[in-house]
Length: 165
Image (cartoon, rainbow, N blue to C red; front, top):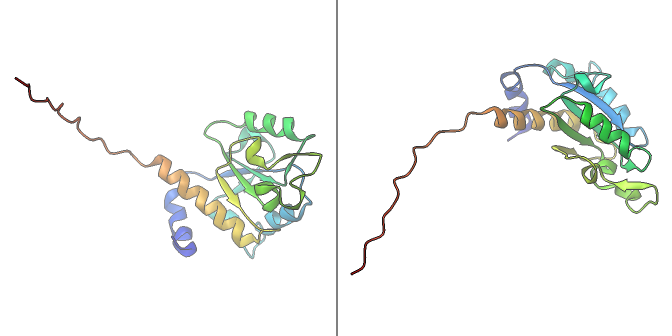
């Protein structure tokens, strides 16, 4: 699906606004700056109903930047556990997705998916605001697919084997 088609589908897919909580688990702040840039009037991610919140208890999506350091591991798990269900995680930047150049560092637990489950990966170092918007659009489409009703099919008649004489 093309990016423009995803953007057109967003208003129909969102029954309510997604509230997003950013969490820096050990990044250089490059990704955080791009997240803030996506909020500016030029990109305006809020037009799609996405809003940054300051507490995990109000968040639908956890937006994690950076690889997980040993110091932040327990804190990231605590933040994730404080979020109400259904909860989703988006990882922004190469460091959070794979560890990037810091992968074998002595102070890292590794990428975010080693610690908590991840729904969307947004690659880049740092990713452009357009990439962040595209990643969030993919998350919305994933949510829409989860909300889609599953078709009910009638149970198949049991097949009897022929009796052998």
